[in-house]
Image (cartoon, rainbow, N blue to C red):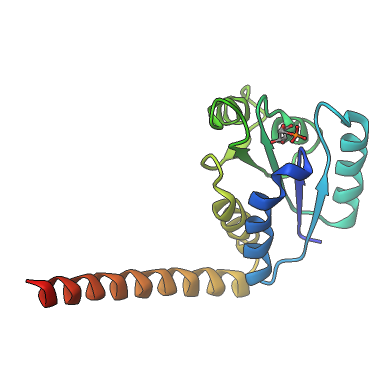
Length: 165
Ligand code: RP5
């Protein structure tokens, strides 16, 4: 297991599935669990220690509302922690963003955008790629694919405009 994805509730899964699917595309081995900083604090702490022993190198903590999950994970490990603020509140995720990103000095959480599920996975792959040429090549290929897709969309738009003018 290279990445442990933790989410505060099963209601986060429709979003977090995108993180899982992206990791799968890169061939990264991961675990996904529902563990809450507030509702299951002891089991969360236990899991983090178990995951470290099992070889986890990066944690992803996805949570909404007063989202302390990623911060609490970071308090229990020195491994890199990525925070994914989930838009599940009346405040549209701004509460989760601030709760996740505003960590005290010495205990960072690398926070992606509100609902930035794909970027949470890509950042995890980038961290793992520091020690893996294979992952680095896959990331470079991913960038080339994105670039080609944009070029294609640009060309399609120009074609459409020229046809209508
Ligand atoms: C957070 O509260 C979870 O991460 C979720 O985003 C939100 C709502 O949880 P549920 O009430 O749907 O379980 O802790």
